[in-house]
Length: 622
Ligand SMILES: CSCC[C@H](NC=O)C(=O)N[C@@H](C)C(=O)O
Image 1: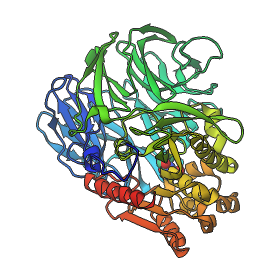
Image 2: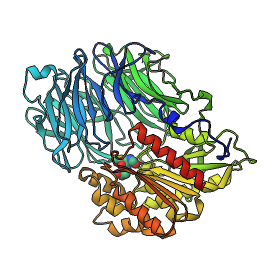
Image 3: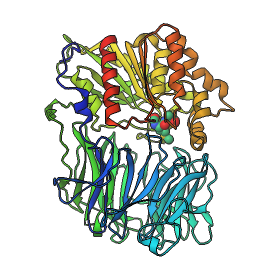
Image 4: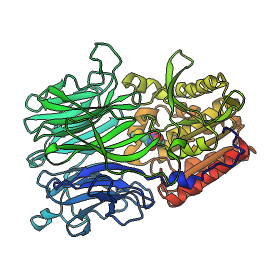
């Protein structure tokens, strides 16, 4: 069925109600905790056995964004914001009593979860409590630690380090609780990694001056520090710092070069869990968006692989249970909703802990993409996922949604994507390009859209439409530009730079003018974003020249703009100004702004309203 005039079989509420389950974490007693949006927003749930009816633990309406089990007690910490404002507060939950304790109570500040101390009596995190534009490091006693120490009550965490300004993260807590690993992201590809001594307050920089990223940091308890890094390589691999010498070595066999042949295409290592007691390791290689899971044992920089599951789709968020006997992870695939799986260490058979239902949507109605590559203006091959609807053919060509991801330092991957399945069911084909600047394909590819090369990535979108026009099963007069956040900028740039290509456009929380966006985005994130886009001072005229708002007179196609009033990243003013400018030119514009949402629409009710309005808009104009 590719004609959007026929009544779709299923409303968007059915798709949006397909539960999203992720973020597994395991308590010392082996209790599995995870986030699930069954109630309409992500909350913390638990289940005793694979497939058993889960039990909800946190009773809130606001979204829970993070959950971390204590290493010593039957307890966990969770983070939750208000109205999707991303200013998370932290809470402690005692699983034995059900008692929930607010650990922070500063709603104007963002509290970024870091790590549990090894004794389970302290936590470490960063927050911009003192200055909106500066994250500092805090350590706070929690739970059992409260009976034996100061600083439990909200408002009195101990600030152990004043940050240099901008973002700052806690990556790990030392095995004897005496130090932290902290990271300062100067850009998405340039991270400074340091050790913070909690007694002296001294900071020792571990990373050198080379541009590199460091993440998934784990002490090995033997004077070493494991991490995922791309130091000296185009793609990421597992590395180990020798904390005595400061030397960083690559762990052989723990990279994306699965064939082992030198020079063959290497992919990113993108998810990692490590258990220092056993030396056991689990990680995933991101092969064109699909995950190859690897497990094994580390001893220094020697890796001894074991059998591992062959997952279809994507595996992420690995976490070991007690004694590292089992590793749990988040799994999804194009036709498989997000759920929590596990595998016994060294085994290949997955156990599904949270079999997610599909609200009566036939699983066979879900459609999977094929990975395609299309040539763009400079001869490069751009990777993309192509999914056509049931029945599309040369006799019945389909309309197409060109769905552009955000970031730009993000990667669209073959995950379960409910609203994509909804539009497929309504007869739309969907093309999801990972244009230059996307992550997941190496540092060099990610830098291809930096600053003055910004519009090259927009040209990659025009090349995508040219590729579509060559397909007999596509109606070239019914192509929609569609994207969120940075992807919203790409939509507005595409319809102003290449106005004749589009039948309609949908901009979710997009950047309309880089100068007003950078002036008004959260102060803590400005320098990081300037590293990607350009300096407000040095590149002001350039930024103005490439901003869609400067070329809005070119817009021909009807435009739908969605935003959230609480958006701390892309201020809602970006939506207001582009709607006004396009509307002034007599082009049909629809605006949907939620007063109780931010950069993401988190409430189920608002999501249903949003996508019903977009479906109606597309039915009218495409
Ligand atoms: C630090 S990467 C920012 C990713 C995020 N995702 C959406 O695209 C985002 O906020 N991107 C834009 C808006 C930005 O701030 O650069």
